[in-house]
Image (tube, rainbow over all chains, first blue to last red; front, side):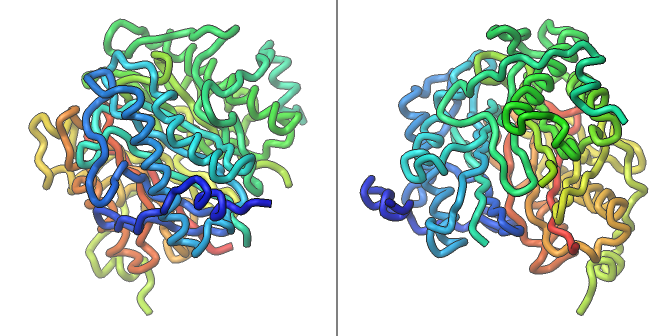
Length: 154
Length: 154
Length: 154
């Protein structure tokens, strides 16, 4: 059986150094068997990959790529919390926040960039519950934000 | 004592065939005693019951009806997950997302359509914590989305 | 060691009488070791401290003060649920909803008003995971809403 860390390696994904929280909180908290990861922005090398609103110029492909980066940052925090992704028994839930105009309707397609990354890395255990919503704006002007909830081995 | 499934029957509510997730995720995940249900739209027979924004033409009554349908779809997923609603010990939390203009203020009244359904079906065990917020837009243009968290018997 | 209730006293914070839920739900639910607090508005003596949108006239200082009041109301509900804040082992997560225009980018700074209150009261145990997002509008026209998740002693 392939572990999540082996799969990451095979996919050629190097988890970035986890970004410190941008304010007065922490990026993860463990409570019992649950690991809660704070909302992650599409930061890459300290810069936002995508700002602005869907429905006002951003493409679906840009959005999926940004959502994928948010998910990678969620995993980077999970690894910092646990030492290894291999302690994750299940990706329980992702919350997806998509900066969008009132007319935009493809929030779910944007968020798939994050969900598909989880499925690639964890297989069946990466299939998660999800809520995706539009927002008028996000911290720092980010176009996407993703939060995570994981079930971890005791 | 009346069970939740008996109450549903008495209320004349037939749970629909649960809708598959509209994207790369699953409609429910169980983690320990918690059952997490993905955000549900006001789908009825495969069609959205209500699209658009509150504060821009939709009535409170339409909204409460749509929120109630979201809650029915949450229960339909819970039944698919558990086999029976009677394993639910407590409705723990509902999250309510109300597509609204900046001027709209009656989000809580719209969301009551979902909350009152839970109370009708589960009685005291249906009284839940709740966060209700406005959003500019939702997947597929839906006017309301509701997610659920349940405490279930081991 | 100083307890959370002693710290509150030293900070000169008197928890208000907890506000009843403004609709068909309850302000808190306990599930196992988790305590879930419903979204709290910046109510003080029955009146909203701040309405409107950031990016459209409200200042950062007003926002931080309103977020702090939301956090005080979260604690007031936690105390009503538990009898004493001293049963709280960890502030696990805050969700922050900031009523904002598409152009606003300082959501995290507003939300710090809530996060810093938790750290003042609970010290290291007050450091929490957090998701902060913009919203077009909130119940009653509030400018900020904060929900809470706590890990409590069995």
